Length: 88
Image (cartoon, rainbow, N blue to C red; front, side):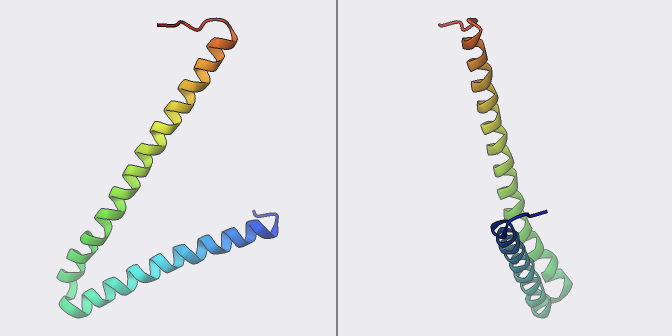
């Protein structure tokens, strides 16, 4: 749980942003339903969700690579500290 006022403000902003995205997604699909029924909703849902999933996959890959660099750098520092560093 948030303990400071700044934490509460950050949580509120995060919830506001998530609520806005969910609301926009709902309005997008509702408009799609009014235009062409459930077939149009299915098509527009796929059009909307594929970029979100692609973005999430890219972020996961980037974060994984960053963690690999951090762990490699950390292991390298430990080797230097113990005098085991091998230079090419």
